[in-house]
Image (cartoon, rainbow, N blue to C red; front, top):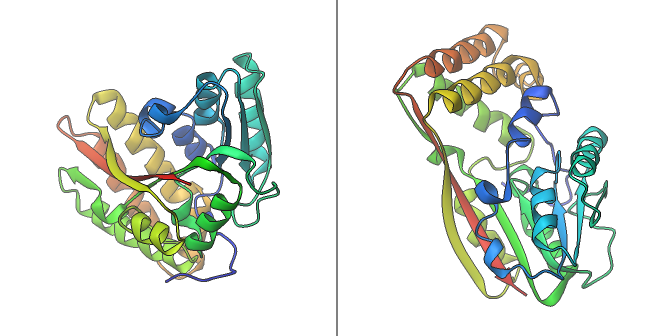
Length: 271
């Protein structure tokens, strides 16, 4: 259920295990659907930029343009600045910001991009309207979000179904929608966005390296992040339940034939 006017609740927090996941994201695996419309001169707003890996990739694709990354977390912004400094990028900047009250004039950007953001908002429709406000006529709004109910894995470790159910309860208690992917098109239509192209792509973790990385970070997230605090503090589970979920992730990662797929929905809207 949408909750107009309520602030976003980012249920993961910014523990190292969360940033470990975000630091691995690139334009190639997280924003490939946007690349064909980019031009070297464009001005891009990257909302919810986190540690800046996607932001930096976008900056490299618009060398005569400018990319602005915004995020509400000071620590994430510092990590993003350090990441882009190390790569010598001079056409990117970062600042604190809130997608539901953007501090930019109307029509400021050629592209307004948000990756894995709308699922955490109480009112994603109003956020899309705000993104449209700061987008130039003829520009693009690009959003991509996962869908937890559509995630699939093998083998069927029982504790992972417990994890998914727990995650969905915690996310919705904070006003978000963990199955955002299937709702993106509906939200965009309700926001009045024109010329919508809807696509989907997936992340897949099936190599030994990927299994160790993915299972390890979620085993840590289950017991050491803001998610764990909200899950236990909100009465959704107890410490024993969190440890059980963490152990399930560790068990899954030990299977040589383990496979995990995350379906992501994408929208590219011409304004």
